[in-house]
Length: 436
Ligand SMILES: Cc1ncc(COP(=O)(O)O)c(C=O)c1O
Image (tube, rainbow, N blue to C red; front, side, top):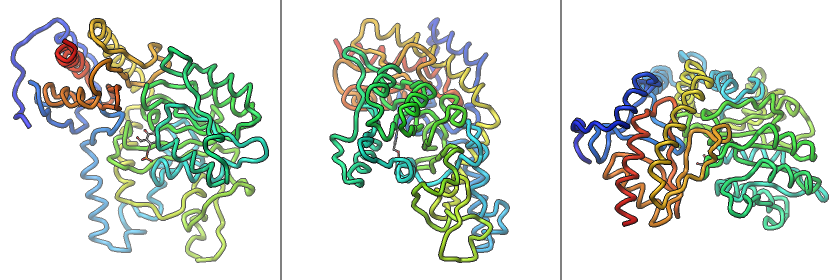
């Protein structure tokens, strides 16, 4: 790793512009640890990989240590006597998580990890019967979702190749149009048991029209669930008002809660307390008031907490709690406004760079159809190789998806206009050399 060194005086109009924009619109970078640069001439990395793993908030370490100290001082008594008692600890996360995704507290819980939650929710909400067996996903769904729905089909004795329908963009197009989904549902909806889509697509950065697709799926008689891994903390969500049946999201990307952090789950109010729904249960599925009566039969509450199974990992909850407090303090509306400014700026710079280079922006150009991520397809060479060079030669950390996509996510909490400028400058230098 190169030692950090001050930038040599190298004024260009656009770098000055980036600095001016940062001065006027500084965001909340001061609340995060930004990694040092591995290469290039700036001391800190230009970190554009928050769509993969968000940065650590400064507050996380002390808050986590305080929870650890409670265990050191109190042992088992911490369940009731810790400053933040462990038994009801998960409740501290419920309201801020609900605000983040536009849900009622009774509809929201933080638990497990994302794919586990999707499976637990599919136990309840994927109930194939008669002709209605299909699961609709995107062809470019994150592989974990594809594996999950295929295994659910097999679990029900169905052939995954016939059961899972993968919607593709039209020939020559990179992303799905809303009508591609709604037309399919209008034509084939009586065969569809479950629609399970990514709110923001992990590869292209496309934001789907969640309310319109949810309404179309429900009108067709299907259940509509959403994987919000790339949407939670990235774009404003109103899951309750949009009548979404269920959703799950992770907390390690835009929610900055650390690698493998706990995930969220949402079940719409209309399903809560429904005794006909199947669920897998454990002692955390029963109501808190009688949990320690140790009876053999559960009494699930009429909230999404009925989907909990095990007692929660307190040291994993701390970072989620700390992060959600930040989102509450800043607010999704403010973040989205800054996100539009930052991503719009990066888009403008990428347009200048890509004009003479074998690079194409895949992400929709309409800001209403994307979050903060812009995905770039490279026409030559390997995406991983390019990302490696961006990091080692320019200190730009981006995320490669082989064979040919590099993703850049200016995250409104901590990314800067100068980070975006560094991306464009690094691409200009690196791709020019590769394509010569
Ligand atoms: C869209 C999407 N779905 C699912 C996953 C898998 O998440 P997990 O390993 O937390 O279950 C990821 C991971 O990045 C993802 O991006």
